[in-house]
Length: 361
Ligand code: TRP
Image (cartoon, rainbow, N blue to C red; front, side, top):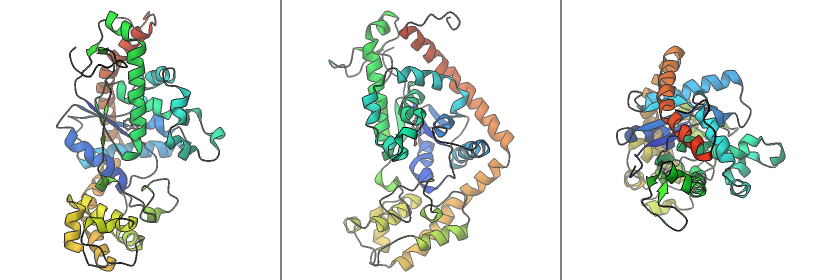
């Protein structure tokens, strides 16, 4: 092969309630991509169990994330939608990557340090190896483009490091088996033929980085103990209005220029949310609201949020009421996903030198 076929892969964890940050930062961005390249969108249930999950809640959340993909406009006829545990190749490749990635690489991961907290000795081994599973998700499809939030950038770099080490360690074997793809940018560290692409992150712009409504320095998160910190996709209009009303701000009026938002994290976040929901820029929002008080801006933001989110939240509610239909989407997606990942794992087993007594063709 002379070039990698472009393919998008991304995943969302089925933990807790979906919120505005998941929607603006991830799911809504999947929709335009499905028309540009073959796209694979995964509900990463294997990642979820790196920390304790109640089984019934995991099932609910898995179907809810699937419903959110659909309600946001991901088309299951175009894109592949499935849950990770149903395609065994993810786990298999993750194990192999456990043997490629180095302890030192994973020790540097800031997300592990944050999630494990003070009691890292008691964190699961899975939480530590989490980025290797993420690399396996992407590379089992030899995906070239990965839309993710800013917080996942380091994991994407690790994915590239794993791909590169594999390509290097097995360079001769890849050529010998005729499985190489011409390297667009060969260097002394990167051989002329590759098996895995080095996937490109498609990082969400600053307008889609949604922060907590209670603390503008923290990402909006389902694990924040305060429900006032986030807008859930299943909040009703009244709740949305209440949360925006209570959102932390400062006493000053809104500035007329984006520079005026510097060091005003909460104001910056609310203006960013408005811009993302309206599909404009912060500069445009400030052209309209510059000089106004939050007492005027917040009701406008609530109305916009309700107007934009209501149709989707309604659709999510309608979809989750019919789990049979959701599961049919996931089954079809898993079969199509497996059809891509199975031949990749077949190649990878051969590259490693596993005797393909059962899987050989
Ligand atoms: N780690 C990602 C997150 O928490 C979710 C994820 C898992 C992912 N596998 C992926 C994202 C592969 C992109 C590609 O947001």
